[in-house]
Structure formats: C-alpha cells, structure tokens
Image: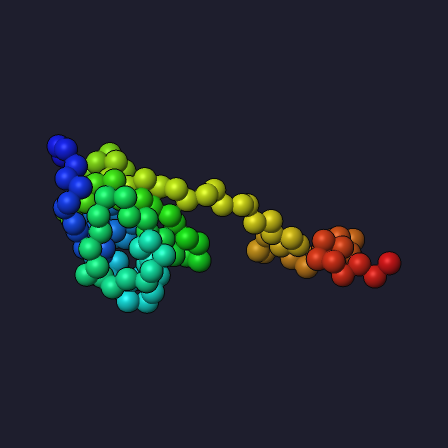
Length: 126
C-alpha cells in the first residue's frame, strides 16, 4: 500500500473484516446490527463509512477493543499490512482471579479445603 488518501472511505463491516477483527464480513455485519460496534461514540450500521482517524469500539466476548483507523482498506491483506491499518488502543485486561475453583475430577474437597474455599469467598463463620 502506498500513501494514505485521507479522503478515501470504506464500509465499517468491510474494514473490520480486512483488519481481522472478525473472521467473516457477515460476522462483522451481524455485530453492527447487534449494536456491538461504535464509531466515535455512536452506534453504526454496517454500511457506515470510515475515514482515517475514526475511533471504533468493538465489543467482543464481553470486552471492548478500541481501534483507530490508520488506513481505509476494504480487501483482506497480509497480517503485517492489516496491523498497520489499525492502531490498537485497547487497555490491557486485568487478570480475573478464580477464587475457590477446583480442578475438574479432583473429587470432593476435604473439610480443611472447604473451610479455605469459604474463607476465600467471604463466608468465614468466625
């Protein structure tokens, strides 16, 4: 890709598919219909056009990804070019602690383990 034309526009669903946010363009269209895609804070339809500098918030698996359009591409390209077309401003996720979860098939907890689980979950009786 050569120079970026700031006046060029591209459809939202096509761009999300081209930069590999969604596996298929129809999945990107479905996400737009469901209201999971916002451009500059506004819910958009799949045919909405994007320009260089637009900010997208895409909800995937309960988390928001924040992307900024750097290149308006509409065709699927190689991974390095796709990464250059979008700037990812998503803050890092905080790790979720699994309090009191045991391995599947580990059997019943002992009395001591059950007390520790209750303590972790805030059900301490003492």
